[in-house]
Length: 117
Image (cartoon, rainbow, N blue to C red; front, side, top):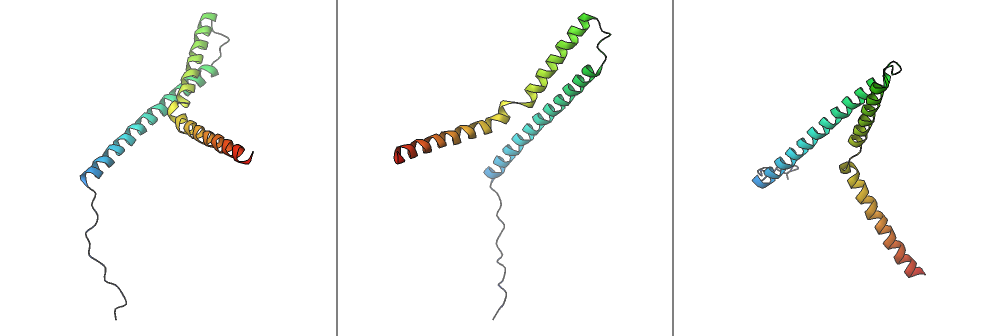
């Protein structure tokens, strides 16, 4: 009587060409998204450094015209930072989940109201 089963000698599962092509496409898409995220991160970092540099300088010695230009640049940098930090792609998934679950809650509430009322 044998105590150990003999290991079967099957060939390992090799992915098909279609599976490899699909994986390669998804990998390329992920790499592209990573590069966009990296570029956005460095843009935010540059804008933050400029903002800190402008706000840290002594503005009392500047003429009124230069001060107004500096304030315009600060406002532009604020807009750049805010728009870079919050984009539709980041809000899209949570938004649709809220819509889905609130809608589901409304349907369940309406059903229970009709059923129990």
